[in-house]
Amino acid sequence: MCVASAYADGMQPDSSIVIIYEEDGEGSMTVTNTDATPSLLVTTVKDIPEDSTTVVIATPPVARLDPGQGQVVRFFYQGAPLQVQRLKRVTFEGIGQARRPDGTAVVGVGVRQNLPMLLHPKGLTRNAAPWTLLRWSHQHEQLTVTNDSPYVVRLAPQLTLLPSSTPVDLGRTYLLPGQTVSVSARGSDSDASVELRPASVYGFAVDYYRAPLK
Image (cartoon, rainbow, N blue to C red):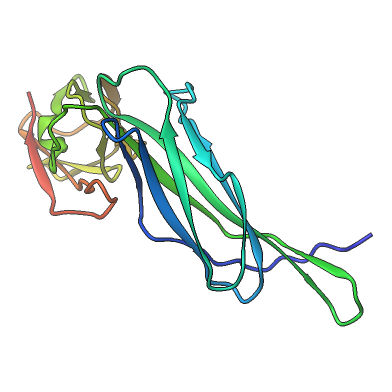
């Protein structure tokens, strides 16, 4: 029997997100083994709680990579025609194995990269600032946001009601198409806007945005 010992495998994706455009039917990601030993790259597509339908297949699901070797992982969309953007997650994990001088095996517990996956419908215009389409309201010490657009909106959960500067925690980092979320927020009767920190499609924070409260 061998004793497992943990070390960090360096499976490095070449982007911060996987995007599948429906008209292409697939997307791809190149993952490189930056560790000093060979490793198995294990790719898994995961559902989010709000969308449990599996519609994406990754290939190859498992691949052996030597040090410095890259692997193109392809993702195929196999669902019904998309009406709105959909969000999934994908993990890339390196599992290595080495041997000590005494000949016993050491199993490498890899660093798991967990990235978002965005499915974009055919014919839908690409929107670089979908957060401008959100609708916000504040009433009875409750802040409500509605995303009635066809886009997934990513943002930091920390919000601020203005001009009272009341902090609010949205409790989530994305809003799906058709989703409405309400959270407790005392604020003030004078509050007229909410300040948020959106994220680009690649997950990078952009400038603060102030949306009117209705």
